[in-house]
Length: 121
Image 1 (spheres, one colour):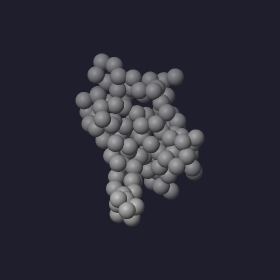
Image 2: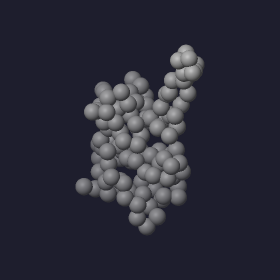
Image 3: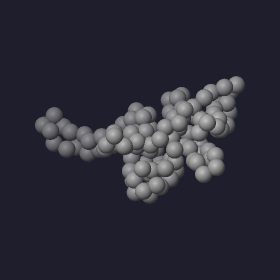
Image 4: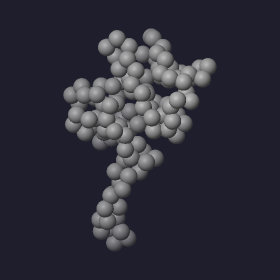
């Protein structure tokens, strides 16, 4: 297993993403609320570059007390990675496909050492 340097930890702010490459393997490294997450940049749907899509909060329906639909909002505590090819969504915190948690992005381990962020590929 190779350990690939991503960047100095101080260079990645919350909400940032970096794509690193080792041979033909690409991994997206995310920072969210101080924690790091890394996933293979390969959508399980049709092989698109999942980690090159946008990150947005989970869409949440809003209902009134009488159960009438009021609209929608985003839950930014549950961010989703959205593949740019066909819109498949994956939970940033787990890599699970939003509608079917049995499907998930391949997760990679992050190592922080000497002020740097590394991913194991």
